[in-house]
Length: 118
Length: 109
Image (cartoon, rainbow over all chains, first blue to last red; front, top):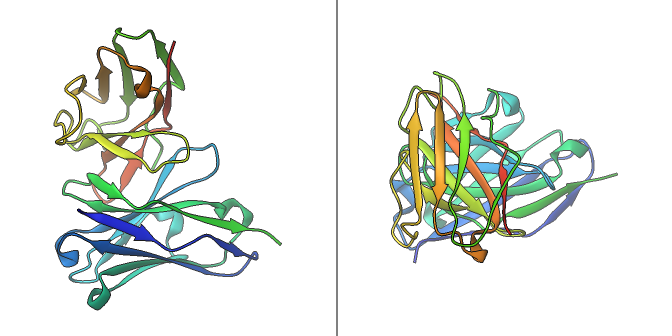
């Protein structure tokens, strides 16, 4: 079945960077864009950006421009999201999700908790 | 890139129907037929319930339906069941980005 499996929880200090992975299985990895969405505790969903695994092209939400980088390794069907210059407000669960088409996200990864604390 | 507007909470009794609204602008909801809805239970990842305004993925009960009028999209859940209690988020394509609603907590009384 189509599945996205993300890397485990991370604890980082302010100013550091974090890199979250998202391994795809059950479909051709290069055929669908991967999007990243985050959710702070008790808050709503916030879209961060997309990446085309075939071309490597990306598009980022204005809020994260300059701090986020989305990449991939097609040989292992894995997408990555790296967020730099972390601050406490970046503490959240980060999700990857496959874009079926028309920015329709299905399925989603299980989520990765990133905690930013000194 | 402002969030779409959803009611913070709605409620209904088992068997009843509820509708959750999602209001945006002509740059997002009103400009494209690319509105989707996600259900999220506590501690779980979101699940796609409706896409392209009114299409239902396989496996989603036909009790869930979507519609749109102008800049407002709606999710209707008929024949409410206990397991429908969850948070619901709308989402819209907005040209170069994607915007989510703030989320609505559905309580089944």
